Length: 297
Image 1 (cartoon, rainbow, N blue to C red):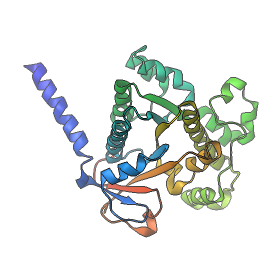
Image 2 (cartoon, rainbow, N blue to C red):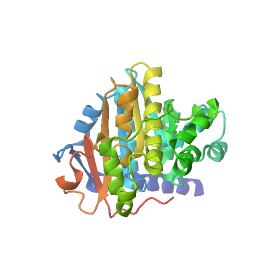
Image 3 (cartoon, rainbow, N blue to C red):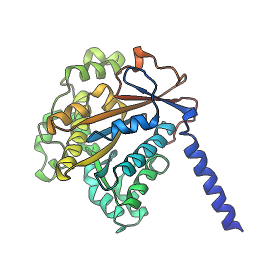
Image 4 (spheres, rainbow, N blue to C red):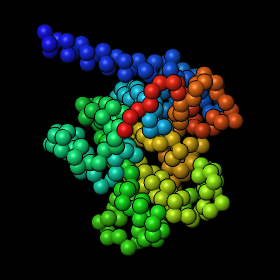
């Protein structure tokens, strides 16, 4: 009897979780603010080689939508294209650990102990990983290790040139590309009061570019390794907003790859597409209900 009650509780909680991604809690728009439905967006995304799902890291609705989009695209591709999940949330030097877990060679306990997962992994990213595991879908640990990003912040971009050949494998090819003028302007604006002290070659901006370049290189490597591959990459929205950042670097590594950007952000009035704020943030912009409680790390 207790077991039955436990199962009912689990099912109820899952229903609540997926219910949070109901259409009453989000609206989908194209880049210019025209409302569109989920299936139309899906059809457009399926024509790309790489789809970037930009999130606010504590947006519960966005995380549920990522799962919905990823599973729908995976099912849509079927056996015609190799679907791959790529994640900012894991760093390239834990790829072996990630692969071992996906192949059931190690337990989840050991996987979590060795892979440095984000604090909200279990609630927000685990469902994606478990789906990939069940469907035998490859998952890419795409990001630059934080210790090397910190090196750039402290010691400058050229400090990476002193790393060992083994360490350099976890990064985009060195020297990695600088931020574009548009991206630098956007980054400086984000920094607010510090704007005047930040140049295109500042350590902080270069740290950001190392993230962008490494994630782009990870996606490009995946496309190169797998003919006709279809990559769905999750990242913080700033990394791909306005098709800047990762998308710009991807063009350098894989100029023929077709990419699509979905930018998700929460707004109090998520039914209202404010063109002064939301226009061209992505090929598609999904506004989610800011009143839904935030995800906890």
